[in-house]
Length: 213
Ligand SMILES: N[C@@H](CCC(=O)N[C@@H](CS)C(=O)NCC(=O)O)C(=O)O
Image 1 (spheres, protein in one colour):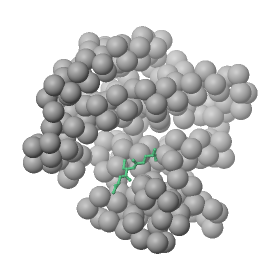
Image 2 (image 1 turned 180 degrees about the vertical axis):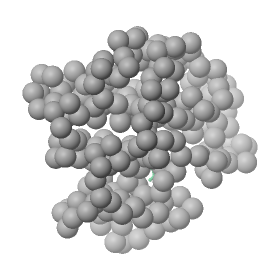
Image 3 (image 1 turned 120 degrees about the vertical axis):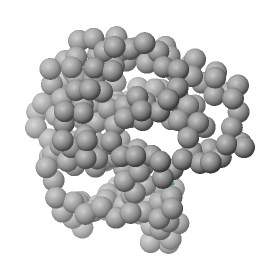
Image 4 (image 1 turned 45 degrees about the vertical axis):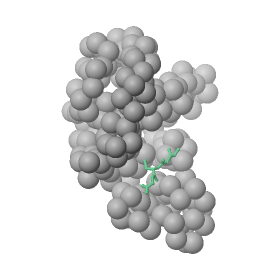
């Protein structure tokens, strides 16, 4: 049994939960973070000194933090050869995309566009910085679109852990209103992901409770 500490509205919790759903693993999820609180207690900080969600425990194993590390752990331990290729030369061709999403596309969208347009209080928003971030995101979306032209998934026909780390952002990317690059393959990817029940259950979570006024 997995224990997931983290609110369903967190995109990093969503990645972990979608992975758990795809792998059909038993879990209990506890609402921690944001309006729920509970992430600054001594007990929580002992599991993750950053005070951030998600944290996951697998049975009575040591707590794990960092969503991408958790997804890789679950994929390696519970995934099949398609979901987590064991040959490092095969796996790196997917993992490089997963890493690029986490370090390039994800922050450019999350920190540059989504956070300042949705979560940051309106009075603190900087329209010029947001406009610049939207332009900076466009070439990254085009890179992802080019990769997905060989789709439907990042690895072509096969769905893998890398799609979890990429695809969990697509709900916010395509449902938040802003000036996106024209990316038909990326949009087709989002539509394909929506055919997966675990994606609909765990990654398509409303962010209205997070919206600042
Ligand atoms: N790099 C970390 C980032 C974790 C993170 O920033 N979590 C956010 C939610 S997405 C958080 O805990 N925010 C504070 C809160 O919810 O109270 C990961 O991928 O797990």
